[in-house]
Length: 392
Image 1 (cartoon, helix red, strand yellow):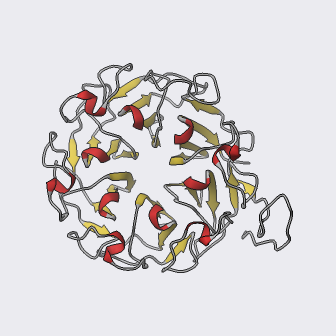
Image 2: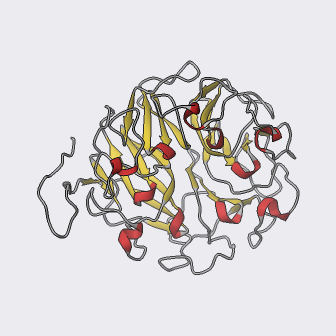
Image 3: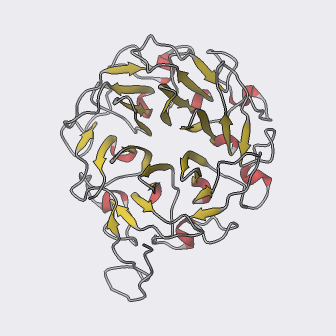
């Protein structure tokens, strides 16, 4: 169903306040919370097997494991099975030599087992892919890593494991370079990378070797441009801050956070710079204001959406700066969300609803992952991961 605007005015709510919307995720809140150390928020950012600092990526792996980009600690944490109790410590560590250590690239040289602000993370061909944006690369393990000594098998964006320069130190990107790649996802056997600093999305049809070139680019007309919105006014093919891309209903959805919208393609694009067919979050291909140029959000409006997932046939959008999670069953232009989690109604916003962290609140949800009827949320501003069941 679509949610429509109510034109009544209440002193307690903003003009244009909308109906509540059905819950997307269980209204009781997350069934498991990781990273809180038994409280609402982490009381220390000291790294430990059960503590996180601003996690921006999460992956519910089809093999039953759970993976988290513990961004502020420059590491990835792994659980062999999805935890069933709050604050379960991680089993696996990648990016640091020990659980109590932190620092960019483990305070050493760049290598195939180090990280600098890891963000997006996804299952890929049975293994794992991790966006390592401040090393301007993507790390791929053919099998899920087992510990700190496991080096990535394939590195994209750099010619070797020691490389770390944006666009290989040049002003102009190519099909082989990256600049702050924040998002990774798999569409079938293809790897999709949101090469955020180059304002583009890259498709790798069959990544096999380090330094391999991308096969397709979206957001730019070719591989050699990195200008914001392709150097022109915002349009149906341009991007400003693409952060996550996923397959949806046989097509593609891209969270273009900088333009405050989600771009939709009915089919997975086959040509460079292919225009989107529809948008969520804006009423026109040329618009880019957050919350549709209003202070309060609506069921149509978004503010810096960074994360995406699917739940059945519905698209799940982490409406990051509004600190809420939206569900869309409609894929037409400027569609209304029909499901809502973490806020009381579609006109509400605010980190943790302007209160303390609860089991059903979020503060800047940067990452999403779904598997079956479970959604994992990288609740970055609360330094935690939420494992949440779909609403019944």
